[in-house]
Structure formats: C-alpha cells, structure tokens
Length: 120
Image (cartoon, rainbow, N blue to C red; front, side, top):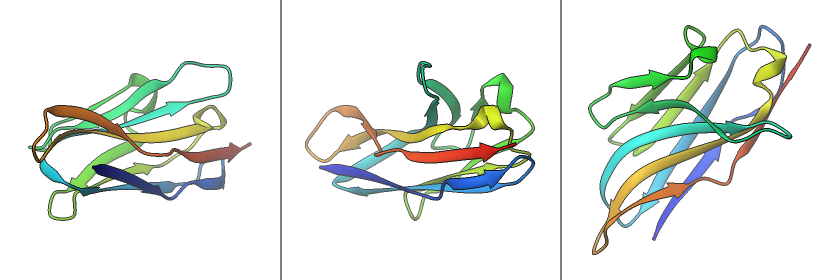
C-alpha cells in the first residue's frame, strides 16, 4: 500500500503565500511523476502542476509565474509553493503520484485533499 499525506493549506489573504507538502510512503518501488490538482466548489478538478522524477515541470496557465512545484526525491515529497494568491485560487488541493509499488503495476495514488481559502 502507498499513502500520500498532504500538509499546509488554510486561510490566507489575497497576495499572500502558502506552501503545500505531499509526502508519499509505503511500498514504493518507483515514484514517478507527482501532481497537484485542485477543485473549487461547483467546478471540475483541474491539474495545476506536474513534476517528473527528473524535475521537469508543467503548469496550468492560470498559475504560471505564481506557483512553483518541486520535489525532494530522498523524502518522496513534493511541494507546491503558491505566491501572489488570488481569491480564484480558493479550492481543495489534492496531490497525486504515479507510483509503481512493490509487486504491483503502476497506479495513481491520491492524497486526502487540503483546503486553501484566499480572502479578498
């Protein structure tokens, strides 16, 4: 079994910053790409940022220049640094990871989600 545990999130004023963390643990053989998604009320879940195992990154246009995804492979942890936050960034943020577990095929695992609320 593989678990993803998120931390960070909460209430922040517009223009502020926040950092989310996602720690993967369990029977991990290979930890490939890690992702951050978000889902605002009444909206579909959207992919915010991705980082590959080699460190290549990709972002949705609405967060480019404001958010930075990174990872610490030694800790099996990814981070999402969010700067210049806007009220429209308010959402539940989920981390996800492409994992090959011991004795298993590749699978996408999800964290439990953490609320980020940006007040105007």
